[in-house]
Image 1: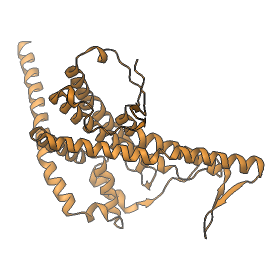
Image 2: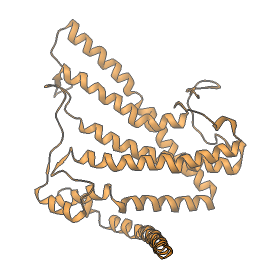
Image 3: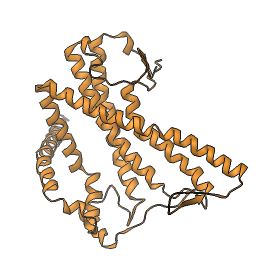
Length: 312
């Protein structure tokens, strides 16, 4: 029994050691993979070549791409630990991206309301089966197409304003212990949540949504389990098969846009998780006087925040 236990322990230690070696090797190879991708862009960006499309599909959800992003995060974080001003700059840029997208695409809500009003008038008052507008070449679709297209505006708001709302403090937060702990403990909780909840969640959803997107754009349908060689073989029969089927006969025909928005949303969540980790660390290090530093929050009136988020 003791010998079997020793063999089992040695096997477990060996597996852990192999895992650590694999992890470190991928970090080292990330520099080579990034350099090779930048120096040979035609291999994955020249979409006139079917194999380039398959390489793009493969690498977008691959281990290599993950370690390139992860290694970049490690390098930027290390520089930020050395020079806090650089890290504050990263926070301002990343939060600026979230704020800019949110402030632009929040207007989709107004477009959604106006379009719904037009649909009601055209359908109930003018009894028109379609809506046509445009200059020179009119854009004409059935009313059911315009009615289903309203979902796209809603998706734009959800996907592209999600991180904006996070920066502005507009999400509902369920608080069990956070409010009762000290300031530095709060920042430690924020850092832990960024690293072990936000980033893994964004990565996991990206892995599923990436192939979910491409299975509705091309055939043969790629799979997350396919190796690069297999995808390159599939490239011989590759053709575009963009999803254009609506829920009704004359309904909205661009549902692939929702899949694209899902991928973009995952990327924005990942970037905001990094920004939140950096902000939490800097506020933890510099103390309470740095809380909200460089935070660009919208206000309705002097001293009034645009969001009054609820905490339970």
